Amino acid sequence: MSKLFFPRKVSIQLVQNTFFEGRMDHLSSMVADISVGLHLFSKQKNDYKLLPFVSGKDGKIIITSTDIEHEISETTKWGRMDYSISLDCFSFVEIYFPISAEIQTWIAFLETVPEKEKQMHARFSNHRELLEVLKKLKNASLPKYSRIPYHTIIRDEWDDESEREYTMLYPGKLTLP
Image 1: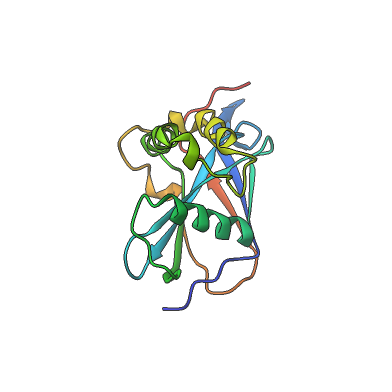
Image 2 (image 1 turned 90 degrees about the horizontal axis):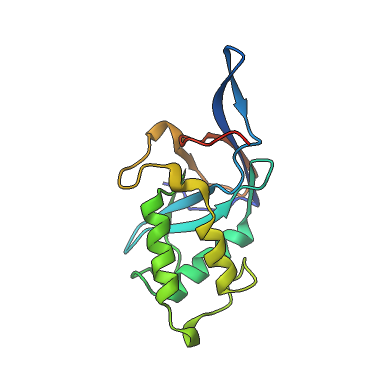
Protein backbone atom coordinates (compact mmCIF):
# COMPACT_ATOMS: atom_id res chain seq x y z
CA MET A 1 0.00 0.00 0.00
CA SER A 2 1.01 3.55 -0.64
CA LYS A 3 2.02 6.12 1.91
CA LEU A 4 -0.69 8.48 3.23
CA PHE A 5 -0.48 12.04 1.93
CA PHE A 6 -2.86 14.79 2.96
CA PRO A 7 -4.50 16.56 0.03
CA ARG A 8 -3.84 20.32 -0.12
CA LYS A 9 -7.60 20.81 -0.02
CA VAL A 10 -10.63 18.55 0.38
CA SER A 11 -14.00 20.00 -0.72
CA ILE A 12 -17.16 18.20 0.37
CA GLN A 13 -20.61 19.24 -0.81
CA LEU A 14 -23.40 17.88 1.41
CA VAL A 15 -26.77 17.20 -0.19
CA GLN A 16 -30.10 15.97 1.12
CA ASN A 17 -32.67 14.09 -0.92
CA THR A 18 -36.08 15.74 -0.83
CA PHE A 19 -39.27 15.39 -2.77
CA PHE A 20 -40.35 18.63 -4.39
CA GLU A 21 -43.38 18.84 -6.66
CA GLY A 22 -43.39 15.10 -7.32
CA ARG A 23 -39.68 14.72 -8.15
CA MET A 24 -36.61 14.10 -6.05
CA ASP A 25 -34.18 16.98 -5.81
CA HIS A 26 -30.83 17.34 -4.11
CA LEU A 27 -30.96 20.39 -1.87
CA SER A 28 -27.76 21.68 -0.37
CA SER A 29 -29.13 24.75 1.41
CA MET A 30 -30.53 22.66 4.27
CA VAL A 31 -27.31 21.00 5.36
CA ALA A 32 -25.50 23.68 7.38
CA ASP A 33 -24.04 22.71 10.77
CA ILE A 34 -23.45 19.08 9.86
CA SER A 35 -20.15 17.52 10.81
CA VAL A 36 -18.08 14.96 8.99
CA GLY A 37 -15.15 13.10 10.45
CA LEU A 38 -12.00 11.67 8.94
CA HIS A 39 -11.00 8.13 9.84
CA LEU A 40 -7.29 7.46 9.28
CA PHE A 41 -6.33 3.80 9.61
CA SER A 42 -3.14 3.33 11.60
CA LYS A 43 -0.64 0.61 10.74
CA GLN A 44 0.12 0.31 14.46
CA LYS A 45 -1.67 1.35 17.65
CA ASN A 46 -5.00 3.25 17.40
CA ASP A 47 -6.73 4.77 14.38
CA TYR A 48 -7.28 8.52 14.22
CA LYS A 49 -10.88 9.78 14.12
CA LEU A 50 -10.70 13.50 13.48
CA LEU A 51 -13.65 15.86 13.90
CA PRO A 52 -15.50 18.20 13.68
CA PHE A 53 -15.28 19.48 10.14
CA VAL A 54 -18.52 21.47 9.85
CA SER A 55 -20.59 22.52 6.84
CA GLY A 56 -21.39 26.18 6.22
CA LYS A 57 -24.70 27.67 5.09
CA ASP A 58 -24.03 26.49 1.53
CA GLY A 59 -23.57 22.89 2.65
CA LYS A 60 -19.85 22.94 1.85
CA ILE A 61 -16.99 21.72 3.97
CA ILE A 62 -13.43 22.72 3.11
CA ILE A 63 -10.61 20.84 4.82
CA THR A 64 -6.98 21.77 4.23
CA SER A 65 -3.91 19.67 4.92
CA THR A 66 -3.09 22.16 7.70
CA ASP A 67 -6.51 21.49 9.30
CA ILE A 68 -5.81 17.75 9.27
CA GLU A 69 -2.35 18.22 10.77
CA HIS A 70 -3.79 20.47 13.51
CA GLU A 71 -6.49 17.92 14.34
CA ILE A 72 -3.92 15.12 14.60
CA SER A 73 -1.85 17.29 16.92
CA GLU A 74 -4.89 18.14 19.09
CA THR A 75 -6.01 14.51 19.18
CA THR A 76 -2.65 13.24 20.37
CA LYS A 77 -2.33 16.11 22.89
CA TRP A 78 -5.51 15.10 24.70
CA GLY A 79 -4.08 11.63 25.25
CA ARG A 80 -7.45 9.86 25.13
CA MET A 81 -5.94 6.92 23.22
CA ASP A 82 -2.53 5.44 22.54
CA TYR A 83 -1.28 6.77 19.20
CA SER A 84 1.94 6.23 17.29
CA ILE A 85 4.47 9.00 17.75
CA SER A 86 4.85 9.33 14.01
CA LEU A 87 1.78 9.27 11.83
CA ASP A 88 2.06 5.84 10.23
CA CYS A 89 -1.26 5.25 8.51
CA PHE A 90 -2.48 3.42 5.45
CA SER A 91 -3.31 5.62 2.47
CA PHE A 92 -6.99 4.64 2.60
CA VAL A 93 -9.26 7.04 4.50
CA GLU A 94 -12.96 7.25 5.29
CA ILE A 95 -15.02 10.41 5.41
CA TYR A 96 -18.09 9.70 7.52
CA PHE A 97 -20.94 11.33 9.43
CA PRO A 98 -20.31 10.97 13.18
CA ILE A 99 -23.42 9.64 14.90
CA SER A 100 -24.89 11.52 17.83
CA ALA A 101 -23.39 9.11 20.39
CA GLU A 102 -19.86 9.89 19.12
CA ILE A 103 -20.51 13.64 19.32
CA GLN A 104 -22.03 13.29 22.82
CA THR A 105 -18.91 11.39 23.94
CA TRP A 106 -16.73 14.29 22.75
CA ILE A 107 -18.97 16.83 24.49
CA ALA A 108 -18.89 14.86 27.76
CA PHE A 109 -15.11 14.56 27.57
CA LEU A 110 -14.61 18.28 26.87
CA GLU A 111 -16.96 19.27 29.71
CA THR A 112 -14.91 17.24 32.21
CA VAL A 113 -11.51 18.62 31.23
CA PRO A 114 -10.13 20.63 34.18
CA GLU A 115 -9.86 24.37 33.48
CA LYS A 116 -6.06 24.35 33.78
CA GLU A 117 -5.80 21.68 31.07
CA LYS A 118 -8.01 23.45 28.55
CA GLN A 119 -5.74 24.35 25.69
CA MET A 120 -6.20 26.52 22.66
CA HIS A 121 -7.55 24.51 19.79
CA ALA A 122 -5.85 25.19 16.46
CA ARG A 123 -9.07 25.60 14.45
CA PHE A 124 -11.22 27.29 17.10
CA SER A 125 -10.59 30.46 19.08
CA ASN A 126 -10.90 28.61 22.39
CA HIS A 127 -12.10 25.47 24.13
CA ARG A 128 -15.58 26.91 24.72
CA GLU A 129 -16.08 27.66 20.99
CA LEU A 130 -15.27 24.04 20.10
CA LEU A 131 -17.77 22.84 22.70
CA GLU A 132 -20.48 25.17 21.33
CA VAL A 133 -19.84 23.99 17.75
CA LEU A 134 -20.25 20.37 18.87
CA LYS A 135 -23.48 21.15 20.75
CA LYS A 136 -25.19 22.82 17.78
CA LEU A 137 -24.43 20.10 15.22
CA LYS A 138 -27.47 18.66 13.46
CA ASN A 139 -25.94 15.18 13.36
CA ALA A 140 -28.33 14.41 16.24
CA SER A 141 -30.89 13.31 13.64
CA LEU A 142 -28.67 10.32 12.88
CA PRO A 143 -29.25 6.99 14.66
CA LYS A 144 -27.97 7.11 18.23
CA TYR A 145 -26.17 3.80 18.61
CA SER A 146 -25.65 2.28 15.21
CA ARG A 147 -23.59 2.91 12.14
CA ILE A 148 -25.25 4.85 9.39
CA PRO A 149 -25.69 3.29 5.93
CA TYR A 150 -22.39 2.57 4.21
CA HIS A 151 -23.48 4.29 1.00
CA THR A 152 -23.10 7.58 2.88
CA ILE A 153 -19.44 6.94 3.72
CA ILE A 154 -16.70 7.95 1.31
CA ARG A 155 -13.67 5.70 1.05
CA ASP A 156 -10.72 6.93 -0.93
CA GLU A 157 -6.99 6.51 -1.23
CA TRP A 158 -4.97 9.61 -0.41
CA ASP A 159 -1.69 8.64 -2.03
CA ASP A 160 -0.76 12.08 -3.34
CA GLU A 161 -1.33 15.72 -2.42
CA SER A 162 -3.77 16.59 -5.21
CA GLU A 163 -7.02 18.32 -4.28
CA ARG A 164 -10.10 16.15 -3.75
CA GLU A 165 -13.80 16.94 -4.30
CA TYR A 166 -16.68 14.83 -2.99
CA THR A 167 -20.45 14.98 -2.76
CA MET A 168 -22.02 13.29 0.26
CA LEU A 169 -25.68 12.43 0.75
CA TYR A 170 -26.75 13.29 4.30
CA PRO A 171 -28.77 10.32 5.60
CA GLY A 172 -30.52 12.10 8.48
CA LYS A 173 -33.84 13.88 8.49
CA LEU A 174 -33.75 17.65 8.35
CA THR A 175 -36.70 19.97 8.43
CA LEU A 176 -37.29 22.56 5.75
CA PRO A 177 -36.56 26.13 6.83
